[in-house]
Amino acid sequence: MKGTIFVELVKMAENAFGEEVVDEVLSKADLENDGAFTTVGNYPCTELVKIVVAFSEHSGISGDKLQRMFGHWMMDHFVENYEEFFVGMTDSFSLLEAVDGEIHVEVKKLYPDAELPVFDTERLKDDQMKLTYTSPRPLVEFCHGMVEACLERYSQTAEIERCPVAHQENATVFDIKLNQ
Ligand code: HEM
Image (cartoon, rainbow, N blue to C red; front, side):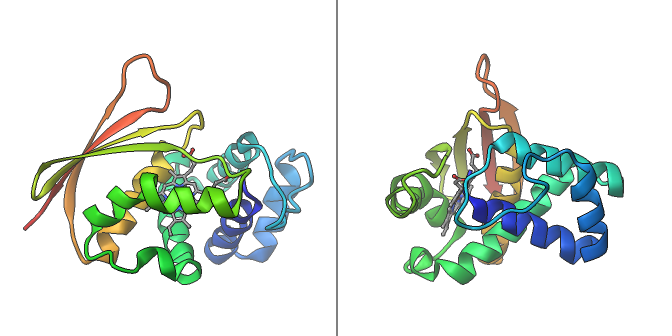
């Protein structure tokens, strides 16, 4: 995975727990590079999972919750750093529909070694969308946080139901029904 993801995860942890705690937790987390991540590097997703587990053990916040928080954090980061991808997006559904066919396509051009998930979207009604997430990485909770953050960005709220896809680890269907 791109180093940016790791750098931002560490920043989120610093923001939540303070720099000293982060140094201590990372040094005990048995990481391949002792927790020194750079934006230009690439690191295995297993390291990301180790970091989440370490902060979960330290804070008592579940790993799932931390991943979701991180989804919100990354959305803010993307909004700040990739403004152009949000031009013309008027609501959360248009943004979610653009991720697979437009946004992540551009991301892949910028960073050919990026490891991206696959999204399939289907509008069931004006106010209801089925979003199927598929990835070899165990980041469904991170994805859930990103979806929530997309809604928040457009001041929308929704009921989100999740259903795993049979025989496909990590793959999940999000049924998103907007509240009016
Ligand atoms: C401007 C918007 C966005 C940018 C620039 C962006 C960029 C990226 C980048 C650089 C990665 C990491 C790839 C790697 O580590 O190699 C990533 C991963 C990911 N992105 Fe996006 N993304 C954007 C929007 C979204 C949105 C709106 C979603 C909503 C669901 C999303 C879902 C994900 C997920 C779940 C991953 C983790 C990888 C995985 O699950 O396999 N992204 N994205």
